[in-house]
Length: 236
Image (cartoon, rainbow, N blue to C red; front, top):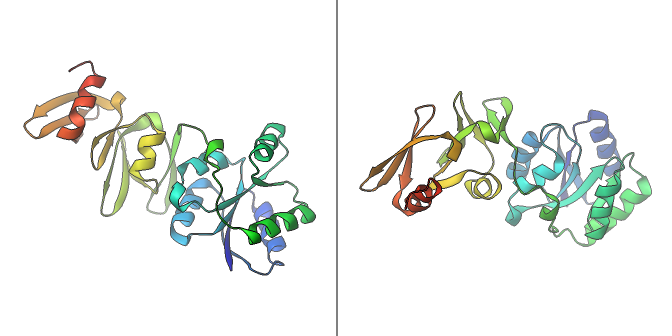
């Protein structure tokens, strides 16, 4: 059984696709998401084999969501989009699966047939932006979108990955590895990333250093990451 997740900000579009998929044996729609933040959580927890991903979603697009997923656990992706000549050309050139809205049942049948033959994920990362402009976050039951420029630092512990701004502490499903690759934040400790623009001062210590942010927060710097951090500010 192929586990499928539908991601689209339009309720009726999700309902229509779910109804169409219900007629296919071997395909089980395990959940639906209305935005990228919900989708990131569901993908990490439910581990779908296949996602139907709308591209034009507010705040965080479908292509941005792709860049936030771990390549090692990436599901097979079928893009869903209103007609966009540039996007469709990119999909065709890379042999990616896509459906145009409104969904044509014959085209959907062809896509499902291909997926059933081989559900192996394809490398769709080349369509994703190189850098994130916003992060999908949550705080309790509230979903939030935080601009990268507003992030002071990010750290991980046993309870997850936490995003600190000058105003609040929220959480994200993204890993430090992905955040280091896709944002201007730099590694200062095995468990910390720091925004260079948020650094007020660096205090040198025997075991490394400690950063004070503009909002007076303290962030540890391990000896391993001290030299590149100093070089960033023109010190050898």
